[in-house]
View (spheres, rainbow, N blue to C red):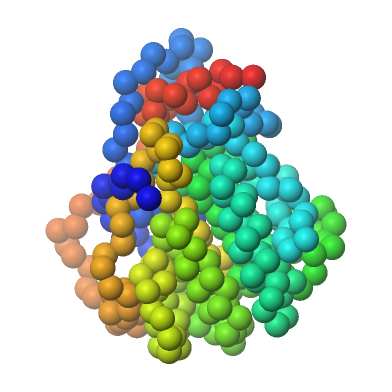
Length: 304
């Protein structure tokens, strides 16, 4: 669906969605940045807004270097979902993202022991870099979905701040643990089978488990990608919507089901290769400024 973004995969053993997202976006950054925004970290500017911009909905830029115009909220509670950690105000997304969550949660509710889904972070009201955590989730097309079965959709606001998801991993992510169920497999299968999805990030052991258990159609497994962390939640990334000219897609996953690649991840967890003495030292994390983002993001911030 649309053009796809060139990526540079940098494997770093950090945790969950707080790590370097598995793509380094290249976007057009020629823009006139107002004096009031120069020198200020973009995360500070985007973190100030409590509401979406009054613009037509559009994602601009790439998943880890962009912003969101006309974002809409996922209602805090629906018939088959609840948004968690409401104090973060990260239940904003592109309209199709909200529609996707509604559709998937309905399918999840059909699984034994599940009433629907607990939804973690999507994006800030106007997308952009976040004050803490993720490097991606900037254009309203990324969704964190808890691995914890949503068996109670009547949680209070306070309960949603204090309840936690549960880990699915064993042996540092080489295997799933006793919390993993066939229902997780079916929900992830439904999530990845939707044509709106570009890829889904899970810990390596979960990918291998699904590869071993799937006896039918295996096409959906291509979209399930191993990545560090992602054992308390799985991360859904949607394709850029049709007609969104300012949105930069990620490169498509390699051909095939990706199972051999996931097995290699597991082997490296169980028997880590010796460190490369010539490997360059990790560069300090750069905090994005407005000049690093697509030019439309200035308008997104200035819009009412």
